[in-house]
Image (cartoon, rainbow, N blue to C red):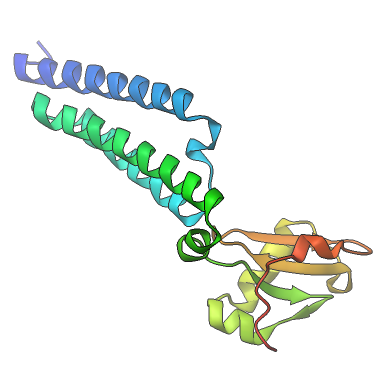
Length: 173
C-alpha cells in the first residue's frame, strides 16, 4: 500500500478544508462585491495578501478552532475593507489619512529626478515601465505616475487632458 491511514487523513483534510475555505471566500466576495479584490488603495492590496494567507491557514488547520478562527478573520477583513471604503467616501480627512497620494515621475518626456529619488524609483525601473506600456519615444510620454497602489501609469501620445493629473503630487524638480 502506498499511503497509510494518517497520510490519507492529511490529504482528505487538506482538500476538504481548502475547498471549504475557498468557497467561503467566494461567497464573501459575492456579498461584498467586485471591489473586494481590487487594488485601488494600499488597504485593498494588504487585504488581498492577508486573505490569501488566511485561506492557506484555513486549509492547513489541524483543529476546527483554527479553521473557524481563519474564517472569522476573513469576515473581519471584509468588514474592515467595507468600513474603510465607506469612511473614505464620506470623509476627505479619512481619505487623506488612509491613502497615499500618487506622485508624478515624468512629465513631457523629462524624468523628475527628485520625485524618483523620493519614491525610490530608479531610471531603469521607469524605462522598463515605459517599454511595458509600449511607449516608443520619450518626447511622446506626457506623464508617468506612481499610483497610490504602487502601480506605475504611463500616459503617452500627442496630448494629455490635465484632469488626468488632478490630485497627483508633483515633487519640486
